[in-house]
Length: 594
Ligand SMILES: Nc1ncnc2c1ncn2[C@@H]1O[C@H](COP(=O)(O)OP(=O)(O)OP(=O)(O)O)[C@@H](O)[C@H]1O
Image (cartoon, rainbow, N blue to C red; front, side, top):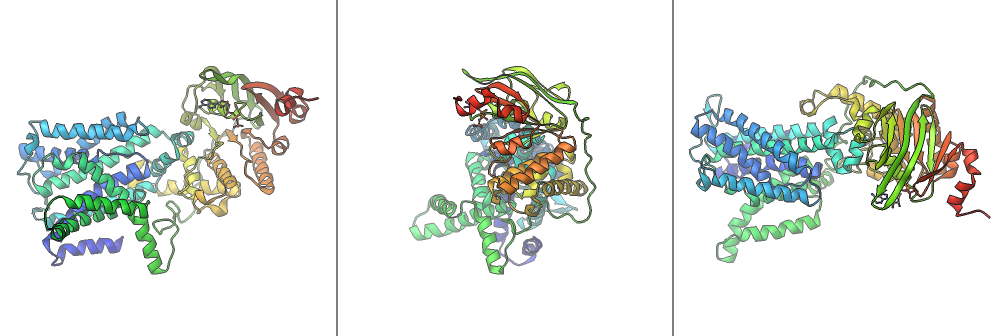
């Protein structure tokens, strides 16, 4: 990064052609928008075609203030950011609720609307646009030449890159990255996913607004053309082609698309003997080929080539150790909640019912669980165990009945509220972030035990807390026997170990009640013994555990009580030995006894 900064800064003082500076200025402006898209689309997983409209809001805000009201461009900057953030908060509150194809369609809808708004408002001089925008003045020096504003543009790009890198390497950043693992997992760790999505959306828009502000004072004139849907698609292309999962991919994509377009614009008319927009067609084809050859984008390819050239290999795609693993020194242990007294009521499920249309998956099931107890929920496939888990943990709403947790009625509450109250869970189908390190996955579980927000993350005021969160994650990994794998990518673990990782993540929540959905599936015999030992240890510490499991040997030797379900109904409850010989249970499993 230092080398890159030096090279970029040197260019301003070297006798390079003015035209290079112009290209570099535009690459810088595009990089800012693409950087926002890396955050929003590549990392948080939400596709937006409408970013150009936010560039427009930033540009017009400053253009109007500086031309019609004679304000300083710096006041224009504040207005540009404020207006973009407000517009993004309003649009995001509506659009971020959409999912699947509807989300990108939604962004196209408001992208188009804003474009026509720019072109039809008298205040913005309609499609003619605004001219005579003043240059930015810095320390009494007017930045009216491209070479002058160049340094400002790239200083802002560099700061933005650092800010986004810091953000991603923070408590809030992990929640943004966790969105790709699905909202159910993130919410079960206490993350407010709606707010996190909105934050990613607003931050991406703010970067676009910043780019718009710079654009207005570089061009000194604005009209709606560069803020339309075409430009929005172009920005998305830059992020994807550069490598949407990587911060530096934004710069790589902006540089590639700008340089390629410019090169082809000069070359093609000479080759073809006629002028036209042929560069759009040819660069489109080149980009498709590139995406076929390198679906992850240009940046990971550049990193691989550089590593090969240097004869080194890095840990992550960026060639650096995984984010969040650079904490020297001892950490303050996180505060723990006090566990309820052994034997006191923790969970009380009363007549819980769930119907999916005509199918009653859980049929008026009742049972209770006390502190320091391990209760097993068993039953044949399709008996309704996972559905009951989802009812208890707030993932699914009940059709009827009640769930009480720690003396309070909790049905109807979102799972993040239950996580805050001390309920942590794992999933039947493992839900983790395969490209994230093992320890970072576990640190997501400790989300509610930290408090630093996104700004503290960006400004690096979170280091002490991060050290504590990671120390906690490491403790839980050691506890379940995965300490050695802390820095590995979670996706590289065997499935059984991924389940254990989920247990460590749930333990990082400091739970009162642990809900484990088939924790022993995929484990070898020794690993099962080790897991049983960990669960017994937790019980002795006062943690209550409810587990769904098909492995009867594992369950019988571990649990205090069993609840048996069949066809959505509780058919038996009792100590393992009694359940083993219960005729109703035998019938459910074996389909009848002679
Ligand atoms: N979202 C849903 N919509 C419709 N039906 C569902 C849904 N989720 C579960 N079911 C049905 O509810 C019943 C209970 O399913 P559930 O997954 O809870 O059983 P299970 O006991 O966990 O089974 P397994 O041991 O195979 O995981 C099944 O018939 C299933 O097909």
